[in-house]
Image 1 (spheres, rainbow, N blue to C red):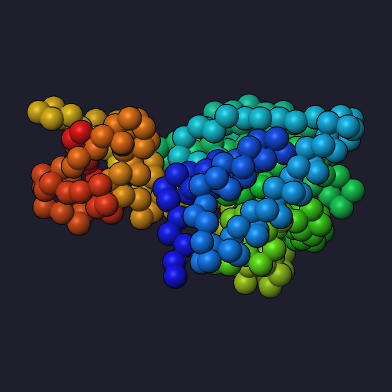
Image 2 (cartoon, one colour; image 1 turned 60 degrees about the vertical axis):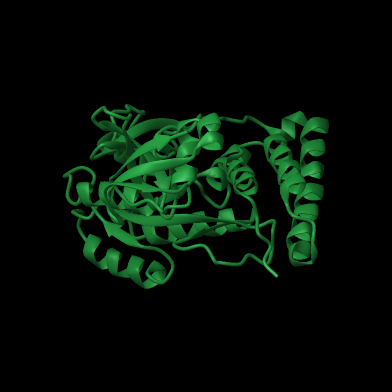
Length: 330
């Protein structure tokens, strides 16, 4: 018997994954509990939700009783096709990478721990934008609570490795291990099933930086030996710009999004500002991005693009493809 989760449940689950504070996560979990079907096929999911709600309530109470323990929190509103965090050890080149890929101007210096708080910029790729966020270095002795929350809520992460330093690959491994200690696992591809509901898997690609440095080729071999089975690896040099555009494309494609353009009846399509949806999204799900009321009243749509002849009328369950043009009819 299938669980048959509703679109409203999946929306609440997405909000939960994007929540950046314990209180936000608790509200999302309560909503998910209300929306989950209550039958035998969902018993395992119900048990997982109860566990998460209980643990998150304890976290909220702990933060309220010990505000100093809760520490500083940052909340950066999502923008663009996705939110991607730049992670790494000291002097890996995260801030310089942010500058190269966006118009942001974070402080960049040759000494460690220049970055003390999150710094966001918008990366352009063709006609879409992706939000990149630089974060302070993570070491075995340094990881702020707000960093963990942001990593867990990100759409993806880029783990930056320093190829100019023999310790670079091991500093990256220390980042992975430190996050794992707080039940945040960086992976190239999350597992289809998660036996421990308290563990969050975060999709991550690895950017091996400073490719033009002396000895970088040998260190890149070490990186591949250590990480190739876990992460997609992209070698580049931020300073020279070597392979920087390849990484830009890889970051966008890693989000698994498609672009969908809209048009009004009798009008040309708006080809300047596409909506971005997860691969496999339907017309109905895309309509939710335009306006919730429109999605509820949606009767049909006309499609121009892959999977349909130009102007074909389709239902809300029609699966969209990259660069489809959609005309919604309520």
